[in-house]
Length: 372
Image (cartoon, rainbow, N blue to C red):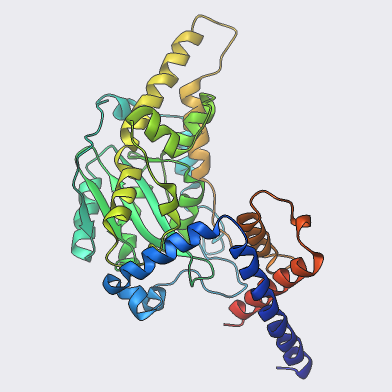
């Protein structure tokens, strides 16, 4: 390393320490600090039963099959085509065919019954269980999916849990224990004859590609259905309350999902997110069909609500994960810190010196990450 580079990194390190103090000040002076203290108390209460938190291990260090490294090189997608087509979507043809020739949603609303509020789940943590799950899902025409992400002590984050629900059972997949074997589920997720129901799948689709080379083909996104129906809100919490009368604590989304075992509260939260999705999807599809019937009396209005919801959903599947390369390293992280801790106030409400220190700290963090 050149002497000038050492001087630069040393200066950044010193500045970052000052920036860290500023970040701590921003956090403790905001109302969100109450949530931080709540999470901290919960963490201290659970440390005795959490293998990862107790030892302060990074579970990602045990992953043997890592698709995403910390270099500046492009992410390598699954390549099912020619040798030089690594940046193409491996299932682009199948997804475009679904968009151009949409199939019926009959499987989603033919058995439109409200899911029971009292339910058990199957915890999947062995490769044998995962293979059995893949076999089970291959026999279904539709299943619901959600994921829980972890970003604490991880620069880009990773998928810590996948929730899958059929009409008969709920499954919680420990993607930390099974990280290297998750490819077992890739065929059912890529099967165009099986519909996968998500809510707000934009990020989930990319995270599954990033961590496991799992590509979603044939998707119904309940958030996109809300858009087409011009719902007043499109959050999952709103849909759970409206259609199922179920309340959920979204603060749990920010919990430490790498811990094992998960708390009873976290397990219930995770299960709820997928458990009711099939029923909610059926409700929304029924409303989409009703809108189409109403429009049938208006020959000049050719808008098809069902087809539009399906088109928007499957357009999400065409997304490809890519590494973010910032012109100014650390800028997005700094912006995230400001947005989380300023409670809607403008960045100009804090001094330019503090802003620069926070950005400096984030830049240093970014450079240290890429330095390995």
